[in-house]
Image 1 (cartoon, each protein chain N blue to C red):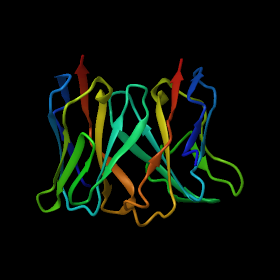
Image 2 (cartoon, chains in turn brown, yellow):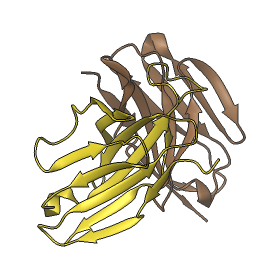
Image 3 (cartoon, rainbow over the protein chains, first blue to last red):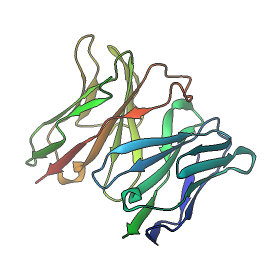
Image 4 (cartoon, rainbow over the protein chains, first blue to last red):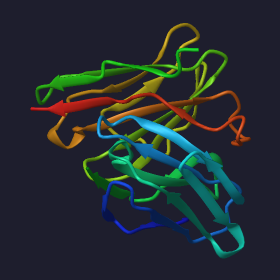
Length: 110
Length: 118
């Protein structure tokens, strides 16, 4: 089945710094979502981005489907950005069944 | 729109007891998905249901776990005779359409139920 790998596994930043999180997937996909799991465990949709680039405030994401990766950019990080960032792609057998990456655990220090 | 509602938020059970987790999908959504997140791991698919039908239960453990989505009321994930290894966060998601995950029809997750087996 499709494999999803995220890097780095852990990241510590000072408030105000920028960062790039990466998601590699082993097979072609027709959609991809980025999620933020906050320290209280809630999963928040960030982007639905099967291809191209999208921006939402200090966050932006780019997916290059032909090269099987997606990037999430966080600019001017804030302590509220702390948590775990997951990318998820559908399995090849069903578009409703997502495979989640192992996540990037981000801690932003004040 | 209240979003996907899960309850309880936290559930503590002794080994051997039953755990019942509830999920009410977003208004207008008729497709429900359950995922499990073990500590320090990503989410893993368990089961996909429509009203009164289990469509795909390929991620469900073969024993002790069951799910339903009745015509009326929330979807229920039931774990019988819980063991310590069942301790995890269980998330429910819903969508209006199953086969077309897109920006308009993407997953929306509930806040999860954290099950602790003591």
